[in-house]
Image (cartoon, rainbow, N blue to C red; front, side, top):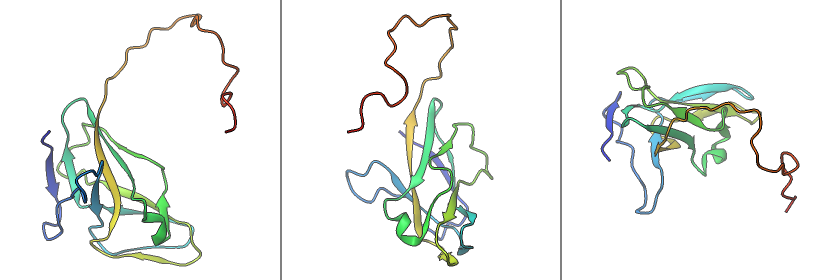
Length: 143
């Protein structure tokens, strides 16, 4: 699959899969940015994408992002296929969970992305679903 990409700063590398088996590609901070303690700041990731129709972009932290003192403020970021304008730069909503100011340097790999296919559904409203109840949320056990 080919995905059109625009870099805002072409001196930074293109996103890349770091191993042959990597499911996601890493993305870089376009600028050096500071995040105050217990605050959120938006790290620009230097790219805009045009993914194929019926695909979306999942933006998540790298497994080592927490070691920087930050985590994703919104858990999983979703980029719709129509978030694809020339100025639609992806950003990572970073929450500083520490008690000190955090600096993320330009070029730091802070997040990873995956392009995933989807199907939109059509809803058919019914009065009853016919299947037996399982007993509510979390009823399959604790272990």
